[in-house]
Image (cartoon, rainbow, N blue to C red; front, side, top):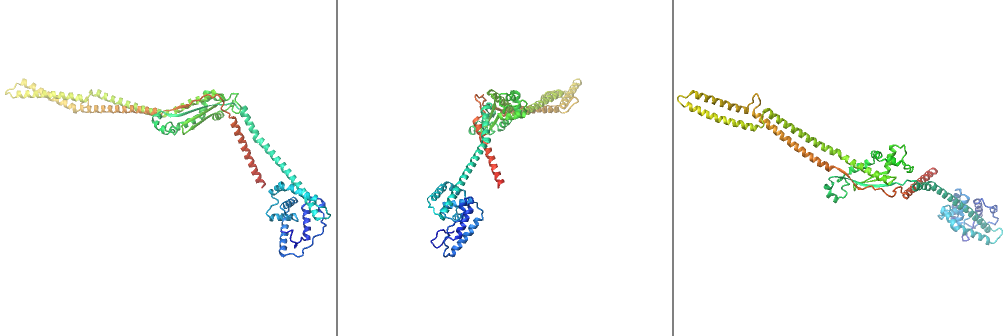
Length: 544
């Protein structure tokens, strides 16, 4: 750095002053020609002697000034550097030297903060000071100090004029940007929000919603889950008392196309939303398809299931309170039928199997009884034990008679001259009794041409009776299975318990005008901000 005021041992060389004047002239090309006139004041006297360190510092300063001059700074930047140097109390001989000294002090003369600080704080004071100096300074002809002050005053005036122009340009561009921002917000946010709000408040048809709640319960849930439900209130919702799968199935059924088509066939769902008093956005066209009607059905019939409580909540929206209640009750009846139908197949299967087993046992019992009757008819024996008892009694009686006859024959033979007329009949009678007893004994163990033996017939009768008893036991078990199946089926029955009945509302539920308007505003604003950020990023990418 060049020191401008030393203690009388160093003086400014004449070439430096001339160079400074030339730099000031080149730095301010837009000044008056009078300011560019060469300085006719006598140059100061050359210094008597220079120290070697000063020579090296001057050389470094000259090199730094040459480097700054090679940067190609504009006249406006040079004037700004002189202004900043004046504010910080730096007396530089040229604008390039002012830039050098400011940079050595760590001040950027071209920074935006420095320019704003100059505009806010130092502009008016500096201009006034220069003006006062120019007015109060003594007018001396060919005074270098007066010429420099005049040049500085002119530079300050030009600078003030340029800064004012910059401020006006900045304010103009700021107003333009604000106007463009307001126009974009009006076009992309305010106007669409106003249209949506106008639709909700003026055009939209009032819609009425009927609320209802129901649960799917099991027939034995009260007895089987009574104690557990007191400890765990959500046991029914977890599928232990009612059945989570059934509730989910009912929810899916009510949201299906089949439910919509049945509701249209029985209650006129499509005709209701084709009415002319419904607004055009909600109205169903006359030639609409089932798919369009199903989309409308999904928007106006809302089904929700709470697994913690096991409650199915249904909201049915219609253009009139009566129709909303009518549609809700119809859908609840469809849900009841669906719940009954879900367990009907299982119940029918269990009862059908039990009844088939009972019928088979009855048929087998009848067959066993028929076989026993046929055997009795074929053998002419009702009971083998009774027949055996009768045969045994006859044999005993014949043997008794045979014994008496044999005793009579022996008694007559003891006589010396027995009577042949009396002995021969007794002997024939004895032979006949023996033959009869033998025949009876053979009939018990040996078969005849007419049928089997009594032992075989008795065995067959016993087996037939045992078969009949077995079939009777099987029939009793089948009847018990039927009763058990009937009890199990009754426990497996699901039914729909309506906890909140649908009631026609007396006020419109939809549209929610204020909430919908706020949501529309936030959506449009979010879309606008997203588009603006995307455009800014793309613009930076293209310009970079």
